[in-house]
Amino acid sequence: MIKCLIIGSGPAGYTAAIYAARANLSPVLYEGHQPGGQLTTTSEVENFPGYPEGVNGNELMADLRRQAVRFGTDIRSGRVTACDFSSSPLSVTIDNEQKIEAETVIICTGAYAKYLGIPDEKKYEGMGVSACATCDGFFYRNRSVAVVGGGDTACEEAQYLSGIANQVYLIVRKPYLRASKVMQERVLNNPKINVLFNTNTVGLFGEEFVEGAHLVEHKGTDQERHFDIAIDGFFLAIGHKPNTEVFRGQIELDEEGFIVTKGKSTATSAPGVFAAGDVADPVYRQAISAAGAGCHAAMDVERYLMQKE
Ligand code: NDP
Image (cartoon, rainbow, N blue to C red; front, side):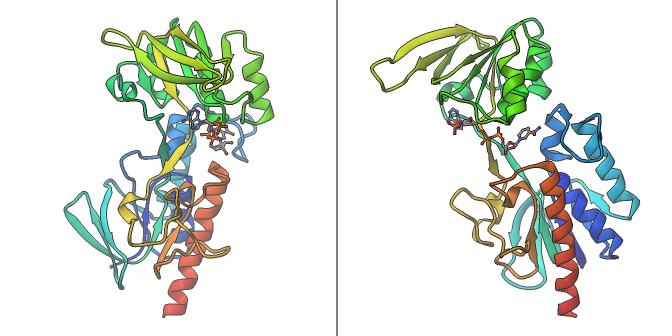
């Protein structure tokens, strides 16, 4: 019987593991299909306290993992494919085959990139369409790319790609950027980035690989204008969806699928099940707030087990 099972290996999962291990809860952590989580697809992280010069996302996650291992966390590879939180012990199935039992579970499964929903995204997936500039930017050296979105992710990706590609379009559906001021300034002052405000993507074209995008400016108004841009890469950066499908029906989720936690605690609607990080946070969604929530979850687990005993 596992005392404290942690699902997910982002900042929330590893921080929960560090705290749980130091509290002698012998945590077992399943890494999931993307060990290290979303930060492994980002470039430089400049706002995680303790790194005055910034830190590469992969290095940060490797450091957090090492710290969790140092205190005895049992880190295993595998994905949760089913669960039953209706009674104690809690039951979780790994990779459709192995059933394990746990007294407590901390869900830290994070979130994933959203797509626009146009059929061409699927058609050109891996042929010019990507949701991760850090992963795929390398293929667009001296070429032309577009990034969709107006938040921090989109600005960060556009900025990153401008160091690789010849030209970067940033396609923003509103007349303004939603990103933080500092990111906005970097993008707007970057001569390689061409920001297309009030613009929506309606399709992509190309023989085999993406060769361009069909765009509409001022859609639905009398200024509506249809035009095409020539691009080799099309990067989505329009936000994220929580990884909670496997928990649906077992714990309370909000209408967007984020896990609902009770008051200031990390407790979910199922006794013994806690949640931390982006999977339960539609508001802040920061690495540091996820790490903080991971700490809270481990402390909540400790208290829960103490009260139970
Ligand atoms: P956001 O939700 O902040 O932004 C999403 C962007 O995509 C918005 O501009 C939104 O437009 C646009 N969008 C959404 N759906 C569509 C659509 N169907 N078609 C076109 N555009 C669309 O997501 P982010 O991933 O950028 O950021 C998430 C959180 O993470 C934020 O809190 C952000 O600050 C943080 N973050 C911080 C970073 C850092 O500090 N280094 C790096 C990356 C993220 P609209 O405004 O019209 O809704």
